[in-house]
Image (cartoon, rainbow, N blue to C red; front, top):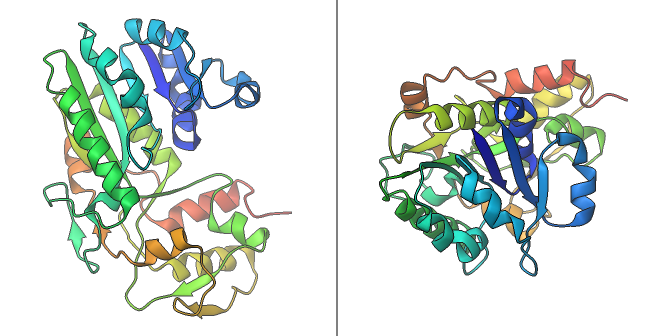
Length: 291
């Protein structure tokens, strides 16, 4: 089985590092030659793909790939992978499994209510609207008899080097408080396992929320990380008074709880880190946040 990954970023790279040996060949794209040099140890065949340049060998690899993992987000107007390779992929007459990494942001604001995959998406931000349009376009490819497209709607991803422990150590952690606000999270290890299970799923064109069991207030996560480190947490700040970037503030404009019941039922998933406490404790024990 041959794998091609559009975008070897945090989640896709974690998947390749864990499961790459199970494939006969792994190839994927990076945005620059410098990035390719930094990832040379992965053993994957690395090809440059950006708005200005697409390695001609990408098409050759796609012709013989059995699985395609797509983690490149759409731009403001179009999905870059679909723009350059959508027709090409549709025209391939061979079995092909495609995993598209999307976001639970497509559900929009639900005022803290639980959402599952049956809920109609209601994206509010331009970023999430573009995601939903990309989902629909990838799903259209899945209508081909020889194609299967699974969409993974990911919660906020954390893991090694990207977590509250690392933020506290760097002095960047904040405890922003908004009444009744919760965020959904998923450890990158559970993302990798979900991708693997989705590739093996014997069924057509599914959508799964990929989130842990416990949506939680963001300030609670920082407080728990500080407890693990044995330090005082930063002071609480009201969201209306906090110095946030426009993107960070947009996250606080949406409040929902993403259900992972379908993920567990369809894929038989048992999360390695069902809560942020499980994930942060494991990261702390692995050395995260330490001097």
